[in-house]
Image: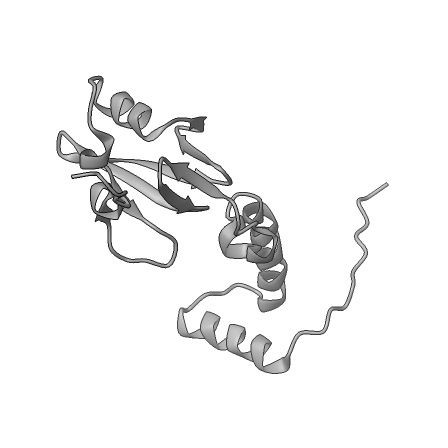
Length: 148
């Protein structure tokens, strides 16, 4: 018995559909715009699980974050370290700092990158969500009374 598909009509604003038709036309694409709507939904489904911050921001617990001594790093903060001409990255996911999908401390991250003991405060840069600039971790470090 042949594979039978059933179809569902979903309201899509006419302008949105016409914008898609025009986009395909401008880019000389022979694709069927109706098929492209289905492709767009499938793309979203394929990516929503791992791009949750972009595609499902309403389900992110924005109260989660990683605490590095006195410094709070919110969920999706990026940390990088430049070493031997290249950058290495870690990311705050929920309440963990992940490097290569493994939970690490900032010191462990720096050690994994270099293979030596390092001062993570002086070697790591931080970019919090919504920020464009990378900032040296030591400059973000809150100073407590009595510290020099």
